[in-house]
Structure formats: structure tokens, C-alpha cells
Length: 368
Image (cartoon, rainbow, N blue to C red; front, side, top):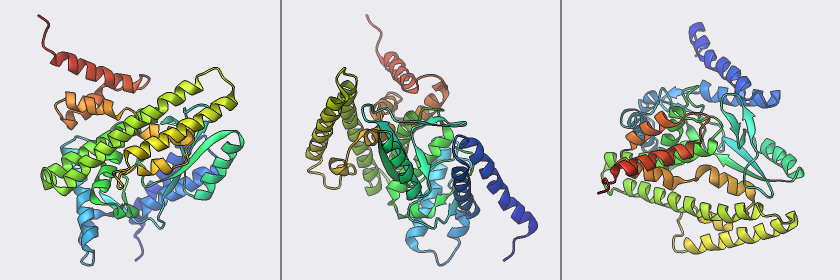
């Protein structure tokens, strides 16, 4: 069916906007990179269909129907119960014509776990760079390796435009189980609510906490305390907390080693010993849990870029959990407290620590 002129213009507006957005956001990148990013995001936006409309199709299979309804319920819960800035995100569905959406590159010096950063307008310095083709990601990784960096290329199932556009549910996300799907959507929706420029480690670790805790509450309220979905969400969060604590144990010795005044060759030798011990220790801890979500760490080829990746998403999760407990396990209150207290230019983790300290101090009885 031919689109009317008005309808065509309406659909072209977001595509023009995404090109302009890409030019500004990726202003430090090559024109080809900008065009490719604009093209791929434009396809996603062009293909959006309202989820409510899809649910009206008689030939929709039962599992897809259930997950689409779940997505809308997650949106409503995030907006109404948790007070996220949801906007129009995840109210629509977009078909993606490949199984892997994006590839993400991270790089780090061989004697430092602080990652290399790229600068982007509006979002500041970012410790990763996304690509829509594996070839492009690996080609840039090889350039960094030639300069003496460790690199890590991974896939990413979704991304947020931070509220610039109404992000749709991407078709390949429907392959996830209900709990993982809900966690991911809560995570991405929270990025619309709070994003601290230049502090991706804080943004991602906080969103991980929010995504997990929100899913626990959502499934408890939807299916009941102790339901399979609720229990699965609880287990997932416990595993992430354990892995976060373990990554802190790995990072400590590496930072100490890299700060020592010894030859680089010795540092490189000793770091391999730390990597090896870490993998053995983690494999020992999860040996009785074959389905443990992070069991693969014990078999992974480690380097500083891989460690930096994990620290980016699992840094100080216990800190956020401490605030949650201090606030009476009220997640909406935690979201409100953090979003009102965080200011650009300040150390956000320190701000949260201060919130925990103040709450704990006010809860203590006065001294006699």
C-alpha cells in the first residue's frame, strides 16, 4: 500500500532526526561510521509497529503474545510504580533482520585496567565503541592491538538512545526468557531516567541493579511471592551480586600489581598468574552450579579489556543494594533519591555512599 504524503513525511521525520543526532553524537568518528549508524538506527525506527496493534493479529503465536503483553506490563510498572521516565519507549516493536544487532569494542593498556575512552558529544567520554558489523569491530580492534592494547569484542542485545527516540522492542529480544526480557527492559528504560555524562561505569552498574531489583518486584506483584518467575529473578540478582564481589577481588590485585615500580615484562608475567588463579578460583566456587550465569568466566581468555568490561557493568553492586535496604526496600524511593542527588561533575559512587551513610546515621539511636 502506498503511504499518503502526510504519512510518508511523518515517518521520514525520525529518520532525518536520527541522522542529525548521529552527526552530533558521533562527531568524533569518521563520516562512514556516522552514516552507517544513522542508517541502522533509521531502519529500526522505520520498522516500528505499535505492540497493541500486533496483539490484535489472530495468527500471533501464544508465546510471542505472552511476551509482548509482558513488555507492555513492564513499561507500565516502570512508569507507574517506579516513576521512570518511560515516554514512548518499548510501546512499539521493530523487526531486526539479523540475529546480532551490534558489536562492542573495548580496549585497555596491558598494564592498566582503566579502559581506553572515546569522546562523544552530549554523553562525554565512553569506554566502548559500537559497530553494526563484526568485521568493522575486529578491524578497529586489530588497530588497537598493533598499538599495544588489550582488546575485547562482544555482542550487545540492545541499546538505549537515552530518550532521544522512542526505543522499540527489537524482534530478537523475544528469544529471551521472561525474566531476562524484563530485566533488560527495566535496565534500558532506566537509562532514559538517569544518565551521568562521562560515567558509563556508574550508569551501567546502577542500571544493572535497577533492572534486577525491578524485575524481582514486578514478578512478585504479577505472579506472587515465591512464584517460579519471582524466584528466578531473585536467583539472578544473587548471582550478579556474587560475581560483582568476585570482580572486586580480581581488580584489587591487578591494580596493586600495575602500580608497582617493576619492569613491564615482569608485570605482564605476574598478571597472567592473577588471571589464571582467578579463573581457577571462580570455577571452584561455581562447580556445584552448572547453570550459573557467569560460569563461563572460568574458561574465558582474560586480558585487561575483558576485566574492564566486567567492572563496567558490575561495579559496587553491593553499594546500591545497601541503599535499597536502608530505604526500607523501596525501589521507587531509591530511584528518586539517586536521581535528585547525582550531579554532573561529582563522583556518583561517592554520592551514593553518602546517601547510605546519612540514612544509616539517621536510623541509629542517639547516644546516651
